[in-house]
Image 1: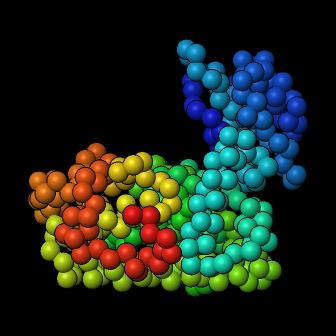
Image 2: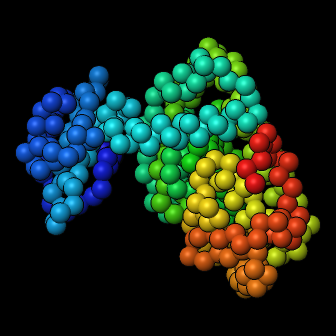
Image 3: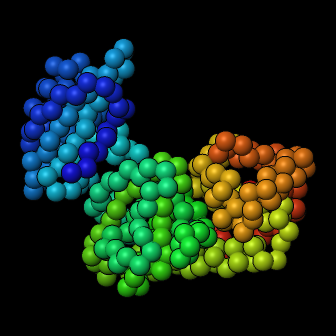
Length: 326
C-alpha cells in the first residue's frame, strides 16, 4: 500500500491505525504536532486509515503519513495539500476557460471530482505504451512528458506537461495508449477514474467538450514539434522548445518572473529535438552567447523574450490562448 505524505519527511517512525480524526489529532498533539492542525486526517468512508507520525531530529515539524486500506480519497488528505490541490484545479479551470465557456455548475463538477494521489520518481512511468488505463492524470507539481519508446530502447519525447495539465486525456477516447507518460524529475499527480470523468461529461457536456478541446491543442503541439524538428536549425529548434514551455508556464502562473524550473536533462533535450548530445551543448551555447536565454541545472532564464521569439520563429497561435501572457 502506498504511503501518502502530507507534510515534510523525517527520520524515526511510530505507526498507529485509526478511523477517527479526533484520535489522530490527539496523537499528533502528543508527538509535538500542536502546530500541525493542518494535517488533520478525516475518516475514510469505506476503509480504516493507517496513520504514521515521524519525529524528525532538530526543530522540524513532525510528519503525518496516511496509508489507506484501498486508495486515498480526497477526504483523507490534509488541509495544506487540499489547498495545493485547489490551486491546481484553478489552473486547470483557467486553461479550459481559454478556449471554452464553462458554467458555475461545470466548475462545481470539477471541484467535486474524486482522485488518488501518486508520487513519481524521476523517469518513472505514469503510463506505459500499450496499456489500457482506467484513470486520467492531472499534474499537481513537477513536470511529466509523453514519449514514444522505440524497439531499440531509444525515446522520442513528444511534449512536456506542467501543473494543471492532463497529459493523458486522450486515453478517455481511445482504447489503448500509443505512447507513454513519465516523470521529468520528481512529480506529483492526481489520478481521476475514467468512469467518474465520463459520467461528469454526460451531466455537463460543456465540460466534456472543454477536455476534448484540450486534446486537440495537444495534437497542435505535436504538429508543431514535427515542424520544429524537421524544418528549423538546431539553435532555433532549441529556442522554440523553450519558448513554448515558458509561454505555457506564464499562462498557467507557474513561471517566476523570467525564470522557469524545467528539470529536463541534456539527454532528454536531445531526445526531444532530435539532436546528439554534442549538438545540444552547441545549441545551448549559441543561445547563451546570444543573450536571449540561459538553461543550466534544470532552470530556464529568459533574458530577451522578443529576440528569443524572433530567433525561434515562435508563433503561439497553435496554443490557442485568448489572452496572451507575454
